Image (cartoon, rainbow, N blue to C red):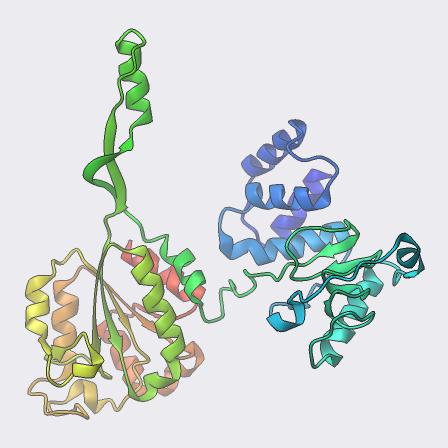
Length: 390
């Protein structure tokens, strides 16, 4: 059984190995879980999936193998929170529960759920048909049905659900869609280089055991500095103009990098890098920072990430005076070249759809300036960019 299950998971492109399968078999032999499909789901996902980016594919493989659903295309992540908010719980007697009929199997349940998703337009509670709460409908939370799909409820109450579908928070970890803050953090964790730094605040367990053994069994505690991510990141964000269409995803990236890197510096620019940048958009005209100062301040081992759609008139990159905001004595391409010459690792993340890139001459020019290390701001693009920076 487990070999077939393992093959099904691999079929859905989850990169698990025989080592993980053997770990799963050993866990079952030790009765870590027993005769409970939900527990087995949690255990198998923990052991077989090593990257959160594959959680959604694992969900599909699991549903396909155990439920016989060959195509699970229902996305419940967009169900409004208000539909599932608990205002009351219906208390039914055993006689009332016995009168409630099941729909008749998982296939019928999933078919009916798809119909409800297409038809329902507002919140329902206490009913027997729609997705809602506190009723006898097969779909929703905090109600009762002998055979239903539990959605948006913490924990089991009656243990009657045929399918537990707590809104799949990893649905959008798809390699080809734009990222959210959480997803970006998952991807950025691959850009890590840990080092011991600071005061001794962490127990060195191995050293403590060795020292205690050498000390005839008397406890000899050893401490060591905590591990911190030693990667240093310098980011340049394009702001304003056509980038207004990408504010949300840039804010998400900005939030994600702040949470992942201790050594992080950032600056803003508009359309193309010129002789000055800034850190506060409210004071962009009064508190500009000389780009030469940036080059002299940050060492070449900083990982540099440009974020922008590179959508502008080509002359803004290639001509003196090409800037739309001021007169630049030297072309933006000259300043870009100085940056790429100074820093060892440079990439450009572009929120513009990659299919649109060939239609913009400015993007072609900017790709050349960053040695064709421009990547789309998707999970796959960010992953490719991080491999270049590592």
